[in-house]
Every structure is written in C-alpha cells, then in structure tokens.
Image (cartoon, rainbow, N blue to C red; front, side, top):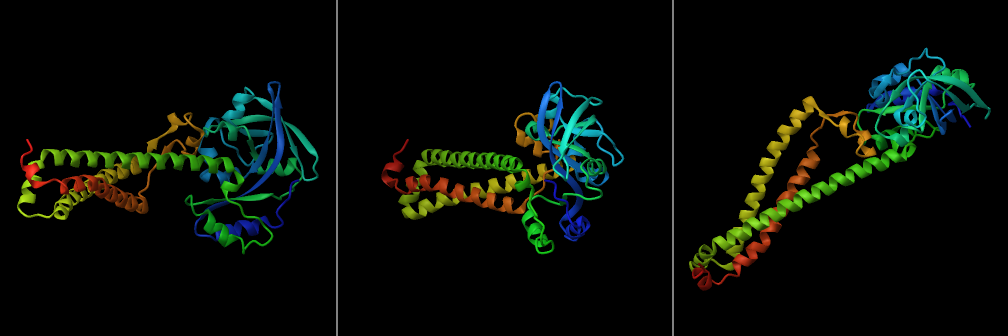
Length: 336
C-alpha cells in the first residue's frame, strides 16, 4: 500500500542540512503495470519533481529520444529503452498504465510516451517508468502528499555517514541507501570493482615476473663479477644484499615513472573526460558510467599500490639474490 510521509518537508529540510547532500526531492512510488498490444510488464511507477531532479538525475542526462518530464505534464510518461524495445514503443505512442492508489484500488489511464532514456541497463529500464509528481498525486489520491524523499549526495561512498546522521533526526522514518533500494546496482558496482582488482593483481604480477626475469639474466651475465666479489672477500649475505638493493632500486624507479605518467594521464582525462558511451552494451555495470567519466586522483590508492609494487620488486629480487649468494667464487670465475 501507499504510505504517505506525515511531514515530507521536514524530511527534505533535515536532509538538506547535511553538508554532503546536494539535493532532496519528493517522490511517489507505487507498483503497477504497463501494457499495449505487444504485451504487459509489471513495474514501479515513480512520480517525481522534474525541475528539482533534472540537475542531479542520471535519467535526465541520458534522454535519447523526446524530452524529460515537466511539472505541468499530464497523461505523459518517461520510459527506459529496455521497456520501449520490449513493447515496441516510440515517443508519441500511447500505452495503458495501471497503478495502485492509497486505497489499494487500481487506477488505469492511457498515457503518451514523452521521452525515452537509456542508461545501458535493460533490466532496470524495464522495471521503472516516471510521471510528474502532480500527476501521481492526482492519479493515486495523495493530494499534496508523497511516499518518499530521494536524497542525492555529492560523492558515492558517503551514504553510511549521512544515514547515521539522519536516523536520529527522523524518528519513525526509514532511511535506506541506494544499495538497499536497488540491490542490482550494488551487485554491478561490486562486479566492476572485482574486475578492477583482478586487473591490478595481474599487472603487479607481470611487473614482479619482469623484475625476476631481469635479475636472473643479470646473474647469468655477471657470474664472473659475482665470483670476483666473492674472491675479494664479500660475504654471501653482502652479495645477496647487492641484488636486493638492485631490485628495490628498479621498484623505486618504476614507481616514480608510473606515478609521473599516471598523474599526467589523470590530469589530462580529468579535463576532457573519457567517453564510455559506446561500451555501454558490453555489460550492464557500464551503465554506472554515464557516457563520459572524469577520473579523480585517490591518494590512498596511489600510496598503497606504490608500496605493493616496491614490496613485489624486493620479493622478486629475493630468489636471484639467494642464487647469487650461493655461487662459489672459484666456479664463478671460471664461468664463460
């Protein structure tokens, strides 16, 4: 059933009082059905404040046909590309929309498609359609009321802190993050992060193998030099330390070069962005990247990856160092 908020403006005010909140918009959400002669789909019908949501809405940024909603719209809907393809709909087509009102009665109306959005997630696009808040209030008998407030933050990752701050300010209300409301998006982000972690591991492993190979070749080519060092009185652990220092030096040079190149690329892409729109069909998690992305420099990631590379460089040098330290000077000097 539709459960209107008792004082929605107090929720909006409390949300906007948080420094990490950039928008708090009122909504109505109800279950419903959309149908035409091609078929029918159960979905969520969401009434929104178009002018308030447009500046912060991913949907508004990704209108591919028609236009975004307006507060004065009547009998019009905004749908996703996934739903449009499933029902063979275009802008201007009319469909039957059925939704449940505050009294659990079904309300049916024939509405016109005013716009189509494409965020690259067909499953999500099939599950939600949008109408204006005023239309939803009229259609579902809510008379100036809303059922939820959507809060937009300045940055992903601050949800827990904002929820913790708002919960005591809003007794009797349930404050949820987007991951709880749309678990499929949380799964998509986790998948993306998992792929990136795998790439990082592979790249670091390749770097370690490269250093190992380089130092093993150095031992083979400098066998006589190793023997000479032993003959001059250097102890095995001193010879091993020499190769460990060489591995560490390679790691330091690699880290500094990588930081310089990475910083230059990051600053460049931070200005012009990177267009992922053509890759949106590769996997649904690409929908989280809204066309063009602008990377930022995470100092924490920068620091720990640099430390990992240095550690891998030293560990990769450990085996060659042990091999070099165990060479007998007499045999090494006779190596050809």
